[in-house]
Image (cartoon, rainbow over all chains, first blue to last red; front, top):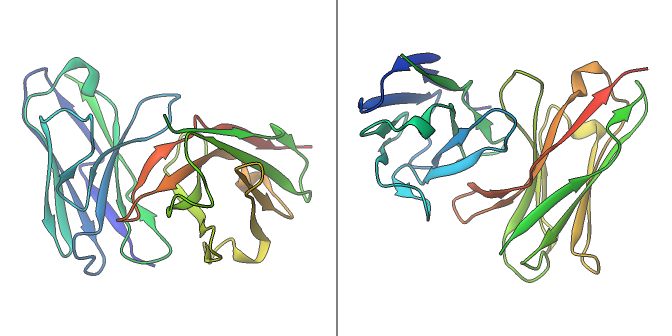
Amino acid sequence: DIQMTQSPSSLSASVGDRVTITCRASQSISNYLNWYQQKPGKAPKLLIYAASSLQSGVPSRFSGSGSGTECTLTISSLQPEDFATYYCQQSYSIPYTFGQGTKLEIK
Amino acid sequence: QLRLQESGPGLVKPSETLSLTCTVSGDSISSSGYYWGWIRQPPGKGLEWIGSFYSGGNMYYSPSLKSRLSISVDTSKNDFSLKVTSVTAADTAVYYCARQGTWNQFDNWGQGTLVTVSS
């Protein structure tokens, strides 16, 4: 199985901050990397697919980059509604695996 | 508008079988050309992919669950089902169904349903 490791596991930031979350894979996954946002009691919401493609309807302050074994999710200017948990997922090979999550909290 | 809705018992006894159904509206499982899947999330923990299928016949299961898992499709009802046999407390989780896009991303999710394994 491909192991996905996110860093940091938690992060405190303020509205307006620029935030970056990193996801590392235990082997190359090309650009088969997806990012999700999850709020308490809700289903995950797809933000970014194929490492850098913005899902329809997702604000442009979210962006993704990278390939191979390391990808990043960047939020250019945090908004109050962005405080949530973020997960990466590799879709390169089965079993699909997720990172452990990054909890983004208000400072 | 695509909508997925999970349904099934919220409480299952240990050693019994967990059965859930995902009803899809706004898209056709049989003709959409997409894969569809199940993902679960134990309380307070991360996400775990369970399995995915294509209505044309391809079925993929998580190796860790494969011996206890089956996914079936009812194209006449436009729904698909999950069965997990011999459940234990470790199978307690919120179970989600989702549509899988062309990059194997999960682009549309059901709201999820909590299944508790307890006597």
